[in-house]
Length: 224
Ligand code: ADE
Image 1 (tube, rainbow, N blue to C red):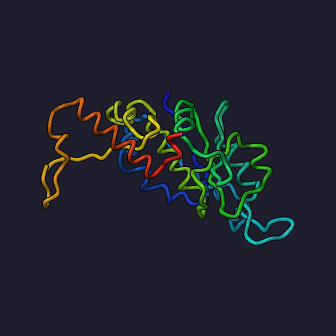
Image 2 (tube, rainbow, N blue to C red):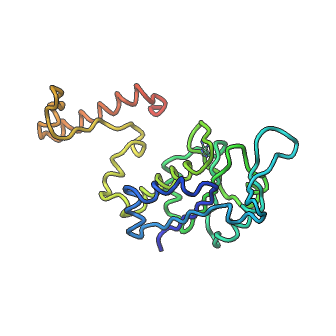
């Protein structure tokens, strides 16, 4: 059975282009994963379809109410599914997390409200909290998209060539080497000679050296 993903969000249309384009769109069209986007407002019960309210104890901003989120979760969850809340105070996303999630049967992503959500949601109907980085987005919908994109790459068949997975940054803990394609000379800028040499051992050596150089410059923390 392919992985099924439900995304609970107040902004479902933010995912339209993301789900129909590119490699992910092809993977969905090929039935390698299913993604259902759910508008949380469909589960709000009052006539204004409100999903948020003022915080108890005072303070600025609005807080996502428990009722529509509990109702939505109860409608979509299945036994054994993993329920994930996207939040800047979650565990940082890593390739290890993305790989683990890609092997689940059913994931439910809850996209937060930038000002917060009622803690009872997090305490009772969330299994795991993930952050995509130390910056704050206006809501978690794009964060859900990032996690979906990162995990989809680990689903067999989604990337055309399996080998493109292993050759990339972070499986090796080094940043990538530079890539070039035709033409070998463009507006006076030429491709490094070694890449045209056909000498595979030399090419490997050159690429390794560029990876180490780049990592030292940009992400020295990865070298320790
Ligand atoms: N929602 C808002 N900012 C976020 C972040 N950095 N990661 C995950 N969810 C978020």
